[in-house]
Image (cartoon, rainbow, N blue to C red; front, side, top):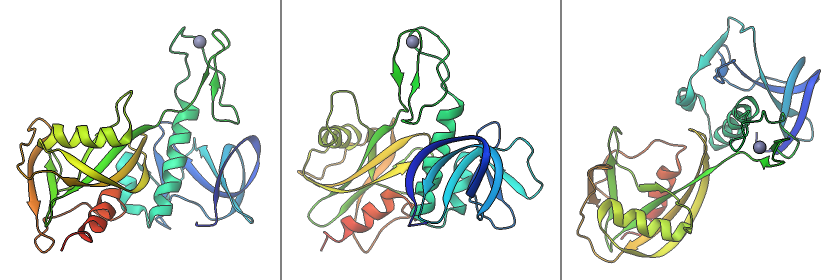
Length: 262
Ligand SMILES: [Zn+2]
């Protein structure tokens, strides 16, 4: 899947040749129970589809399947996660699911209630009444691994089975760096500095862009905000609790941050 590039093409009522990703009328993705994959092999089908990736030799289309074949399993939201083999599967699922949702929903202008146009090639929908173009929304969210000289700070959030890095949504008028400093102080009462960018990841539940940082703590006294966090502790490299599963940015961020510890 590494040779596919993102694209967007409206391919309604025509024969579409390539790989296909199907959704039901509720927006749930359909998994092929025989291959355990949500991406079909190359084939030609007549469909109302949207091309969302292309390579030199193939393409990936998304479409709605009204008659669901018996070998398909309908997966709700995060149920797909255990069928994703690697970060490319996550990326493709993320683009496919969010674009399908955008094509099918958000059909009325929030200013005047006019029915919007169908999706345009630049992903916008237009309002014929107020002339606005409306684009899909993405919510930026920071993740931060906080380090002392010898330890990493990990928190257990309410209703999660593992310890992980701190996280929070970017607010209006705020830079990513300001968001990191604010979130850490709000969640554990610690001031941080010396921020290092780690990487980013798309996360389609529902439409987040996670941006990971590593930061140094000025002090080590934790005052957890119990409305968001069950507990927060400093951990040695050799004594880690259960951390998030593979494929998550929080996992790779923790692994990278541990390299900075003695
Ligand atoms: Zn309008």
